[in-house]
Image (tube, rainbow, N blue to C red; front, side, top):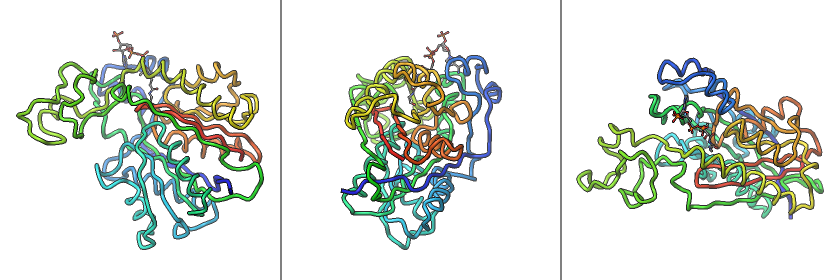
Length: 355
Ligand code: UT7
C-alpha cells in the first residue's frame, strides 16, 4: 500500500495584532499574568467583515496547493478541521471549495469537529483515502475564527486571552519513496470529559446534560419556557453562548496524554524519542509544551513553539506551526516530524511523519 506524504504546506494569519496590553481595554488582566501562565505575547484576530474561517483557510490553502505543484482544480477532496465554521451548517469545507473557485469540480468536502485535535484527525482521515488509492490530491486544513466567540469582559478573561485566529493547510499526495510519508496516526477520545472544555450553545441538549455541566452556576439550560431552540435571548443575556474551560483539569490531562500518545506512535514504528527531529505540539499553552518536552526528554531546539505570537488557534495551530517551521528550514528531507495534540472532547492524537 502506498503511503501519504505532505506535498505542500501553507499558513495565513490575520494582519490585526492584538497585544496583551490591548486586552486590558476590555477586561481586568495584564501582560505579566498572560505571559507567565501561557507564554502568549500577542494573537491575531480577524477584522469583522474582512475574513471568515473559510477565507483564512483559502489563503493558507492557495500557498499549500502552489507548493505542492498543483492547481486548485486538481484537488480530489477537502478535509476541513474547525470548531468555528462560517455557519452552524453547512460546514466550512464547502465554503472553502467555493472560495477556491472549484465548486464546479463537485469534489467532496467534509468538516472535522474535534477541536484542538482536529488537524490530526483530519490528516488521519485523509491519509486513509490516499493509502487506499481513492484520492491523489487531498487538501487538509485547520482554520479558526475564535475571536467572535469570546466573552471580552473580566468574567471571560480565563479564556479570552488565550485564543487566536488563523489557518494552516497541507496537500496530501501518495508517495512511492520507501520509508517516507505519514508513518502512522494515533487517535483517541474520552467523552466522559466533554463538559471540561465546552461551548454549549447553540446545541440540542436543552438541559439534558445539566448534571454534567460544571459551567458557571447561573448557566441553566433546562427552563421549559424557553421552548425548543438552540439559542434564545436568555442564553444571550446570561453569557451562556461562550466557551467554558476547567483550565487546571485540562492542563493536567494534557501533560499526561501528549507524551503518552507520542510514545504510542513511536513504539508502533520501533522508534524512540531521540529519533524525533522536530516535535510540533498543539499550541495550547507554552507551559504545557515545555512540560511535555521535559517529560519526553526532548531538547528545546527540537520543539516548535509559536504560541507567543498567535495564541492558541485550536485546529489551526499545528498546520500553522508546521508551515512556519518548514519556511524556517526546520523540516528537511528524511526528518522525523511528530505532530501531537490534545483538546476538548477530550480528544488527543499524533501523526508521525518521515519527511
Ligand atoms: O487548547 C485546548 C486545551 N486548553 C488548554 O490546554 C488550556 C489548559 N489550561 C491552562 O492553560 C491554564 O489552566 C490557564 C492558562 C487557562 C489558566 O491558568 P491557571 O494557572 O490554571 O489559572 P486559574 O484559572 O486557576 O486562575 C488563577 C487566578 C484566578 O484568580 P484567583 O481566583 O486566584 O484570585 C483567576 O481569576 O488568575 C485569575 N485569572 C486572571 N488574571 C488575570 C484568570 N484569567 C486571568 C487573566 N488575567 N486573563
